[in-house]
Image 1 (tube, rainbow, N blue to C red):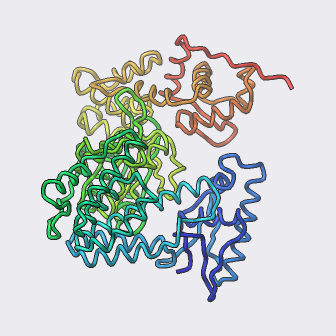
Image 2 (image 1 turned 45 degrees about the vertical axis):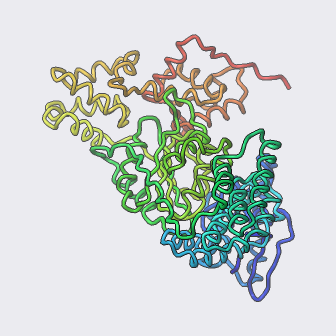
Image 3 (image 1 turned 180 degrees about the vertical axis):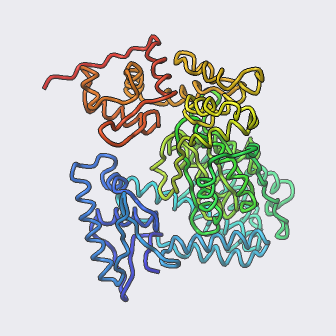
Length: 599
């Protein structure tokens, strides 16, 4: 093994084992190894080094650290492992070279053995996986970002330890694990599963009085620390000891078959013009049997059809994920982001956990979710994500699962995710989409009007489907008639609403998610005479601070409300987004900019 992160960071090669002593080099190497074989941006490395407040020389200092690490690796016989790959760097690690990858593989083997009731094989695999740990993950690497990732690894270690203990108890090795459990409880006194295992171990070893004392001690701890009574499992074990004289389940108990969730929405009837991105998504997620979790993030502007592509891909991938498909839209009915705590509660119930036993805190829910999904071939579809922080607690911890995310923003904070961006359809595909709903004869009667209608819909599938639905509901209308109604800027967004589909509502959701400065700028842009934005914008917005305007403009770009072009005019606000900006401008919201402070 060349790279070890399950403990202090170590590199081995040429017969030597080296601990990197320079603090910044440890942070850079640890960050790269956490996402081995994936590109880590220079900005991410800078954030890891300086905790979101990098100096102006950050890029140069990162380059110096990388150069020094390359020299160290070359001395150990590992040249060319850190590769420059825009927008940052990638460290190449082959199969079996890193302890984390080996850990994942052994855990997966243990879970598969357990599913097949091969308890001895499961115990051996889990024990070998845990033996790889030499302490806390990445101990000695001082960086909030690295420590957060290391904490997640430590939680995985603890969850696997609990799985191993369950196997040992089912094998009848009660006395053997009592000491181990006491050490774990001293370090993790609020882990209810450990307390339950401790009671089962003592009871199975014939030490009933100590098992009851262990319950009373756990109850005092929960009351003192949390103000809560123990959960249902501990209370059940206490009752079993008092009434039956034992708390241990028989060793030959058959495990309850895990729930197989099938939460996907209906498969779209037809998908036009998206064969290429659909193929990319299916290829990236079709082989999820490795040790890492494949993640694909689909991005694109409002109404471009991200959810449709994701749902079609999920249905196509369902045979590759026989243990189930989880789906959740992470915007609620009012357009507010769904917090990860609520998402985890829904997923845990879908995975078979009774609602009353769902833990209260985010960390406990995330931990239980990762444990429930570990080693299972489950596809997780997270639709309409607003920010990476909604996604991170919902990522499985071990290989076997796959994750498909859609967002109006490019989620660059999802390290290692495959990005798939959707642009509006071409005119030909837009007309094909209209024809699929209306029938070809109705469109061929007015081909020019069909192309015009597609353009007035910005070639966005959502707007096109609304237009097609309106025409289907009014067979006496011609395509030209509807196009004529859409030509009026003040009426276009009103016309693009039908049967619960509404372009204005989708734009309003994106607008509401903006920071106040970005909302103010968006409204102000509604007064521009054409789609091209003047540069610099401050010449058109007197009194606005240039840095504030630039930040707000980039937020509009991130939200895909403003387009980035090439040439002299770099930015454009066009089509339906521009009409919505004009509506917001006409509202009673203020559009004034604070005057720049004098030097």
